[in-house]
Amino acid sequence: MDLLSHFLAIVGILALVVTYGLTRGKGNSCDSKRIDAPEVAGSWPFIGHLHLLGGKVHVVRLLGALADKYGPIYTLRLGSRQALVVSSWEMIKECFTTNDIVFASRPTMAVGKCFYDYAVFALAPYGPYWRDVRKMVTLELLTNHRLEKFKHVRASEVDYTIKDLYLLCTRNASLQTKVAIDKSLKDLTMNISIRLLAGKRFSASSDGKNKNDTEDLHLKESIEKALYHSGVFVASDFIPSLEWMDIGGHVKAMKKVVKEVDKVTGKWLEEHIQRRKECDQTNGDGDFMDVMLSTLPEDATMSGHKRDIIIKATTLILIMTGSESTADTLIWAVSLLLSNRQISGRRMCPAVTFGLQVVQLTLARLLHGFDISTPMGMPVDMSEGLGLSLPKAEPVDVILTPRLPLELYQNL
Image 1 (cartoon, rainbow, N blue to C red):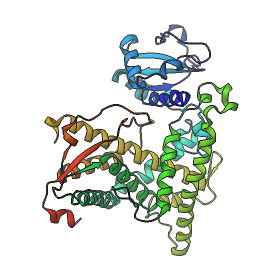
Image 2: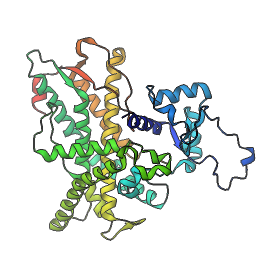
Image 3: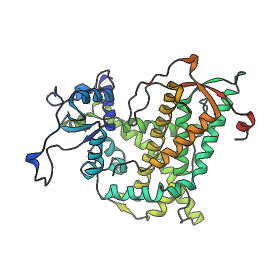
Image 4: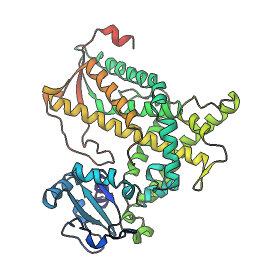
């Protein structure tokens, strides 16, 4: 369990660290004049600085403390890999704007291999495949025009969530009730993502009861497992010679969860293909799966990946990133509002516009529809958890009180 926690802690590095080859620059005639970033002291043989990342201090705060000591740019050795840590906007601009091509790729990792053999474009190395799939996602799926066409999906799901929260409040005579708001927000963002991608919805209410059948629960569990394993780094990610050992059994678990998710996305894809045959639908005006089927010919291949694999891999990563990061942003926003009541009121993510639309609409509707407080006026635990999008460590329980005329909720 300690080993698992050790490698889980490393996940937070993705928010601040760009892995690269410090000593493998190509075609640089100014190497002799280069000034290397300082390296953190205390590196051990074989594992480098990995031992620093497994303690009780959250990895993000540890990196911040090291920045206070070594400056806004420094290096760590993670096993056989070297990593550059930057913590100032000037350095970030240099890395991701001025020299973005240098940092555009991704290191080889177990999760990329297990998740469709790097067909998930967010995990793919910089190259033709990444460019082609990202181009499809940016120009066909996540354009402002297409997101505007699907604004009714966002609005209806937010309506559903607000009404569901109101119904929970009506169970108490005082119209006040304790709600695990993080669960409601996660279900909301997952439903929006799945409806946009496949025209489906996960039918769970905020009281924890599923309104359809076990298939919905299996879907949610599979997606949550995929989210978890996408952020688990195995030992071989940093020390490739340990790949044969599969320490912790993470690779085996990743392969299992991909099979589970593939059953779901494969079923969706077959339904879309069959429906298109029956209805002769080829204009790409349906959900995102329909758009991808219209964009990619049946015999299309990209870097050895066939069309169906590309669609399933892209669907998976858009569900994972579209639901998790947006939900975590909402949860942090609610937590910050509750903690500050006086103010209440080139690898860039291609879905940033979509995420902001969901966050802004959801927050506006939630704050407009309810007075929100904490149980017994207690402060909110603001500890950071482990995960790719830096989730909160503890769930957020709030007291909701409807503040609008009752008929406005009932008519949603």
